[in-house]
Length: 213
Image (cartoon, rainbow, N blue to C red; front, side, top):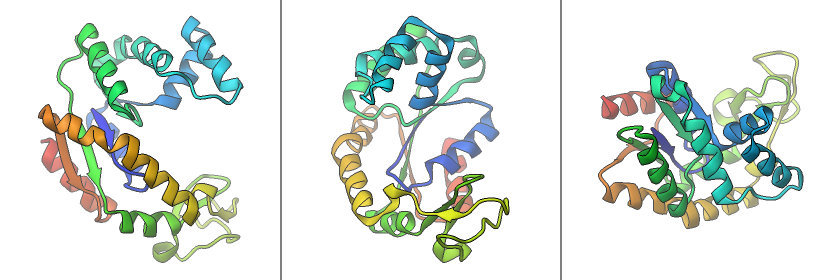
């Protein structure tokens, strides 16, 4: 499965539910790159050089690292949920070739759709704990910057820099420009399942499971 959706759509929450429901391996691009670096593979060493320099890892290197990870036995046994990859049409085409080479079977692409105005409201009201990293909503949970974390009691609540209004606008602009075209790409191939993500996490989960079943 591939999980698509804009920043603030609730992909992390739905990914956790899907992993629990289906027992699939949950992989983000960051997880895969860090795993390759930790294992000291040749591609991992090359990726580390870019990461240490603070540069983006080139597409062809990312694809190579992902191919290595998808070839492992746990993926064949359990299946996989890719979160945050692909981000561009070029990456999607390369992933399709890799899946064909590895004979990984049919692909399902789940897109969580949420209107920009809802995303802006969600993200600007999002708060996090600096200790346990729990996520809270200002309007729903009544906690704000500087408060003690109601979950762990050890951390303080803060607002991520990328949840500031200017950063949110830039993140959404980048998403619409580079990643949103994947929706049309996979829809044309009959692989896309589109789900309204504007409801509560539980409501969205029920919609997701209904469509997947």
